[in-house]
Length: 261
View 1 (cartoon, rainbow, N blue to C red):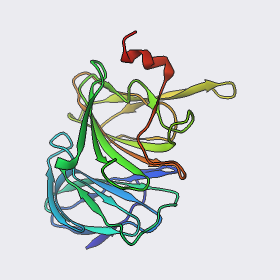
View 2: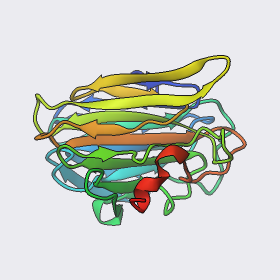
View 3: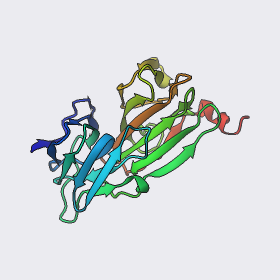
């Protein structure tokens, strides 16, 4: 049996990090979260038995097959994962302290039937948003879920941000991307309001299957190429001292899109 701990191998920001462990069929692993970190595990693909306060078998052919199974892991806790097939996981965690173990905290499994699904947007930016570790899970700083874009559609749209610059809760975010076909692609926009010191700060990231994009600040719209469904796991951590919540601030220049006026 091996022990897996959050390290931020796929992405390590100031407040949130991401690992993407792959488990071999027939292997058993302990996933341990030290005091000072809080973590969330999401099954991307595979067949596992999860042993926490309860035991649950979870299967998912790929991210487009069914809603996820997830586990919230408070500081100082651990779970056991037995892989019955090759298994791909996402392990998101906070960075920067200010989360600590408590006597009452225990890992909580969120099965696929408990995932909260929101259908959002209008033609051109329609997507399905799945809350995995969100309002129904009493996490300290983490928020984790999945978004599914139809082919050719936009999401995180109209453009929004949650860096605290306009009174919204301050969070740092990371996106992990997959496509329903291996040649699929899309684009991630990243921009901030222009200011006298820096001028316009904007760039675009070409997205492929497996891309990871950190979003420490600013607006971050996403689009999928026609013909290719796009998926991304999103993990956010509040900045210390910020209330946990999914509130956001939309770019005022594009709010007219809500009413078409």
